[in-house]
Structure formats: structure tokens, C-alpha cells
Image (cartoon, rainbow, N blue to C red; front, side):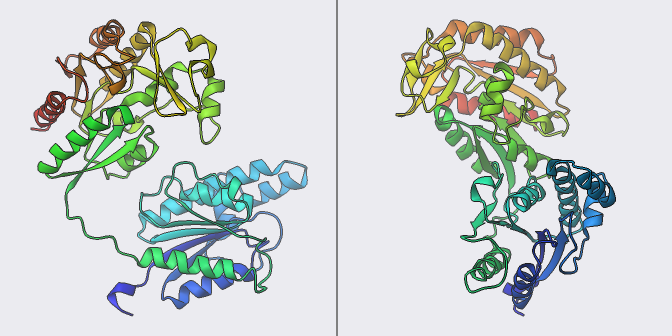
Amino acid sequence: MSAEREAKSIALLAALDTRGDEVAWLRDLIRERGHRVVIVDVGVMGRPLMAADISRERVAEKGGKSLEELVAAAEAGADRKQATEVMAAGAKAIARELWAAGRLDGIASLGGSTSAALGASAMTGLPAGLPKLLVTTFLSLAPIGREDITVMQSPVDLVGLNRVVVKTPSNAAGAIAGMVEQRAPEAGARKLAGITALGVTTPLVQKVSARLEGLGYDSVVHHATTEKLEAMCRNGEIDVIFDLTPFETVPKLLYPAELLTMLSPSGEVDRSRLTSAAEEPIPQIIAPGGLDLHIFPGATGIDSVPPEYRDRAWTMHGPNVVLVRTSEDELERLGSQIAERANRAPGPVAIAIPLRGFSDASREGAPLHDPESDSAFIRALEARLDRRITLLEVDCAINDDEFADAVIRLFRQITA
């Protein structure tokens, strides 16, 4: 085997009480490419149709229950959710163990909606770029969230190896094998900066990224959400955080639980944000990008937003997105929240405040321009911020060159 085709280790998750020949077919095709396959049985009821490398008993145990407990509960009438949650937790723990042991170069799952849920759970939180393939008969029920998971939908149920069914696992074998064989171009040993962004702060992000490149850093930009940034921090992949756009704090702090549930990809209420920054000693530069607005996707005008926001300043951000100004009271709460998070950080932190607008929508002359409300944020921040944290106010708008220069000066100051 050539260096380009060195053997890789691929985990394959499936419920072996309903998938046997289909899993064996996929496994054998991957092996023909010269790779190792670790079969993980995530089934509960029924007898396995083939041997697994990691048994369902072990998966259940890793999830916090014995397989016997799950079977007994199911036979007593418990719904399927309990067993699914246990096996999902177990599959996730096993995937982490394989990764930590250097035995995971790629991961795939095969099956219906339950197997899709289990596979997605196992893949969630694994390093970005690690090949992840979810083969399912129910694309709409593949809960991949914002992970870099590749989804392959089967046009028919994956039962039997007829000439229609066999094409899906065959394609899946080529897909996952090709992904683990593909080598990304070497980018060198440059450090990584995680940067948060929105369209209204994109000019700042571009300017900071360009300046960081000259300092030997590559930038990984996270648009609107920070779940992947969180995972990358925990995996030790991020060297510095430029939280230039903590807009995510607006819904997480200000919105009621029922609205957060609607906005969440998982349907769960999650008010946490960048908790890794309060646990890992990663240097942070924070700016208030996007804290000056609420975003209402799908709205075509002010009459399309909830009534309680209709008496505020607003603007259109494209044909189907309305931006509405945050109030003084809301910005006071946001200022307190940002200060509390910064105070908890074990690493060096600095905060830069642009005095002439927190986004492109609130610069002088723009529809959301409101320096009085911005001042409410600054007052709350100053009142609660630990004295060890540098706070720099800059007399410019957030997307000005002057502010990008100030951000870089702060970065060099706290990492000197």
C-alpha cells in the first residue's frame, strides 16, 4: 500500500439486530481499500445478526445503564426514548475513547431514524475536519445540528442486499474511505485564532484576520454561533479568542425559554455560551459587535416582528431579515453579562469598545444609531468589570481601521 493509502481506522455504528449483511457489505468494501473497521453495535432489542468489535453491552454500560436494564424496561412498556438516550451517550463516550487512543480517523453510521440519532450523537463534538458520514433512510430526522457531518440518504430502507439497496452502502464505503484517504494541504504550524462574526461586523473581522496573518496566525471565523468554537477550544485547537461579535448573548440572555426552544437546532433551552473561555486559560479579546440589535430572520418588515419590538428603530438586512435596536435596559443586562463572563476567565482578557457604533447598522447615520443605549452597556460593563481586565474605549465605529488596530494592540499587550 502506498503512503497515500496508508491504513486508517474507521468506526462504523449500526444496530446489528436489524442490520447484518448490509453492515458486513460496507465493512468489507472499506477493508478492500486497506482500512480497519471498528464495528460498534448500538442495538438494544433482538439478537445481533453479526459480531461487533464493541458490543451493545459495552455501549449501554458507557451510557450509564446495563443492557439488561434497558431490555427489562422496554419489555415493561418503557418508550424507546430512554434506551436511545442511554445508547447515544454510550456511543458518544466510545467515540471519544477511540479518538483519544488514536484509533479514529473517520466515523460512519448506518440505519434509520434511531441509528441516525445515535450516530449524530457519537459524531457531535469530535474535531472539525474528522470525516463523519451519516447514512440514513430519514434525512429529515438526521439531527446533525451545526456539526460538519456528511449525510447520505438512502432512497429505500436498508434491508437486504438487492441491486437497489446495495448501491447505498457501496457509495458510503467509497465516501468514507475517500474522506479518510484525502490529505488536506499542509498549512504549517501556524497558531489559530477563533473569531466570532456577523454580516454587520464582517469588515472588522476581515481587517483583524489580515493583521493576524502578519503575526503568524490563521483565523477560524464562526458566524453567529459558537458551538464549534467551543469544541475547538476544548480540543486544544484554538490559541486565542477574538470574541468580536458576541451577538449570540442577545437571545441567550434576553429571550424567554419558549422562543429559545424554537431557535435551537436541538429544541433545547441552552443559555450557555463559550463556557470553555471561563475554564481554559485562552487569551481573549472581546468587543460588543452585534449587541446593538435583535435579528428576525424570515421577517419582511417591522409588521412581521413580534409586537413588543415594533416601536423601536429598525432596518432591513436583506429581503427577509429585520434588524431591531436593543434598548438601554437590555444593553445594561448585556454589559453585566459580558463583564461577569470576562471576570471568570482564567486567561488574560481585554475588552475594546467602539464609541461610534457596535455594528454597521448603528454607525453614525445608520438606522440603528443610538449612542445613549450604547452608553448604558458601557456603564454596566465598567461597574462590574474586574480591575485586572483592560478596558479600552476607542472613538470610532466598530468596522473602522482604527478599531481593528486597537484590537491588535490589545492582543499584543495581553500576550506579551
